[in-house]
Image 1 (cartoon, one colour):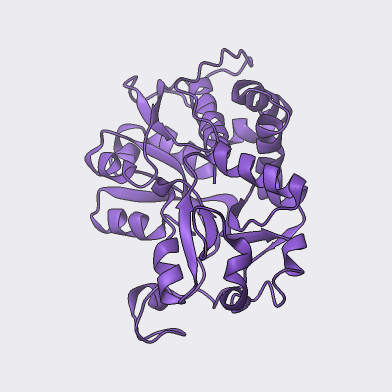
Image 2 (cartoon, one colour):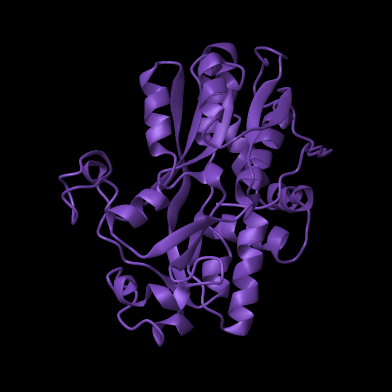
Length: 313
């Protein structure tokens, strides 16, 4: 998932678009959350700027990925543009079950998040990408801080993912070490890759890294909801989480009151749709080319005007 947070987003664009929604139902700010990775900030900024073109008052609010559901339940926050099937589904389902949060559908992007290693590690750990190979070669992934255990470099703690539980359930001789930020995660990958140094870490799509670096995701036992919930299900009959992470859509969710207070905005957000390919290209421009989120979003809006105008009709 993820990169640098921008505390405020101020794009000034004049597209010559008259308010596509005849009457904006309320000028109270619609509070849309931003998190700590570039793609989510890009997604959120595209949607927010489109809603501004329709006349809505938009406020971007930095929030924790999982903890944001508390604010969405109470209506203190209104919209979250990226809830990943891989890491956010349980929190999303719990929030929706309260009746205070609703799904606004899929974003068009499909999430993959899993352990990943560079291809050059296959010589030191034969049998990869099968997860069972890690049982015999954890030590080749060790560092001074984890030896004799291998080191798995996880994402920031706020991303969730149950990696500690997975290590224990699958009886892997690994220590999970969390990167402090998305930027730190990929900086360490870049450094290791250039030196052909041992590394295994959290990687995800949509993102530029799986295209830039040659490597593979670990093939854990297939995910099932039962594997996460029932210790008797899976390869270890005594522990849950003895399987890989799920894959699936990246969802949009909202405070249940959104469709009553701002029905036009709720429909526009439901209409939002971008692909993995589009998002990976935009993330690359920000993370690799050093372009600002504002510039990248403005470029996308300029190139896709007919498309986003249809969202707000």
